[in-house]
Image 1 (cartoon, rainbow, N blue to C red):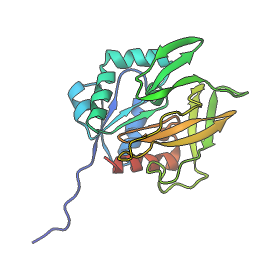
Image 2 (image 1 turned 60 degrees about the vertical axis):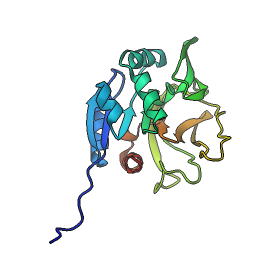
Image 3 (image 1 turned 30 degrees about the horizontal axis):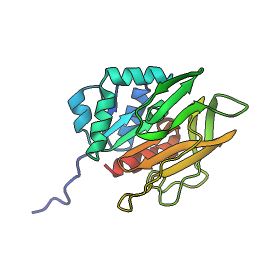
Image 4 (image 1 turned 90 degrees about the vertical axis):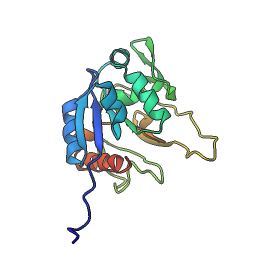
Length: 219
């Protein structure tokens, strides 16, 4: 006799703990969104999880150094090579670009995407508080969210120019979401297995919870 449909196991998500991120708030938000979450820098667990979340707070160069010391650069590269989902948040998104410039000092990023993280071009910096975004048609990350949904930003640096395009008809072109603080900047990217947000979904209330639920649903 059947007891009803079998329960689907929760997706395993590792919040990568390399010393530069709000790991506890990310853990709580992901758990509320239905994931089985663990905070760790353990190599095998990070490699084998259904999803890897890479947070980031602080300076670009320091985050890159911490990530490399934890072998996070290698983990991200190998996961993406195998089509395994990775999501970056705030500086965890910024380090996915080719380089960052802070206080006139240039540091190399992971170069998953071309582009330079540079100071925001606005009268008021940092950009701190709630803002809307302009998501592209067909976005999976922002599915189910109204166009006037607001997300919580805290940053002084961003990418203002997106240059990567997909010339392979078998691959979907990256979906890039923009926001504006002074000048438009990249607020989120969906690019195959690699997604990222400049804002903090874990601090963005119901809209952020929906966004994380959308990501977990793709794992």
